[in-house]
Image (cartoon, rainbow, N blue to C red; front, side):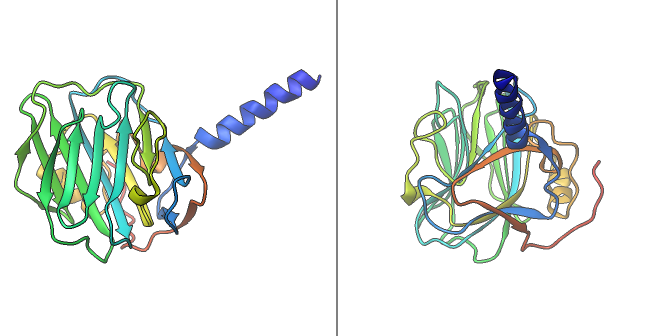
Length: 230
């Protein structure tokens, strides 16, 4: 009987950690610098990626560099990385190598960020609040690996760990969605104003996640929308 109860409790604990939850109008809040606070996300799709789009809102209050979105595999800890570097701008890494999109400072208001990449051309795009930066090229012909550890709030210097407090996010992050294809400019602008287009890797409206450390769920501070999913 004790063994059955123990197995039941383990099953309940797991379902609470990675059950599907509608996070609409909510955000993860990281109130202070930490090497132990993070959110782990479970991908809907486990297949290798020949392309991707990641969109999210970020609202940060730090005067240093920090990680925004970290997607690691056992062969590449920076398989996909969206990172802010103080004094330089936003960088996007795929399979290790990265490209930089220059910016003098992080916006003081919540910012909608979309990053896209495709293997066929190597083209990388960065969109900030529905406006594109100049396209760049990275890792043409590469395939993003499987069984990813996806982390918000920290950069992974090892698979699922290796966190550094000086690279942690202090602020809010939300509306995290990911697709296994490149959204069109029209779709990215529609996502910016609140539409979703059925994300098939990470879906904010059916999110599988687990929080660790001082991470809290609070109402979003950016404009709220009630637009339906497509």
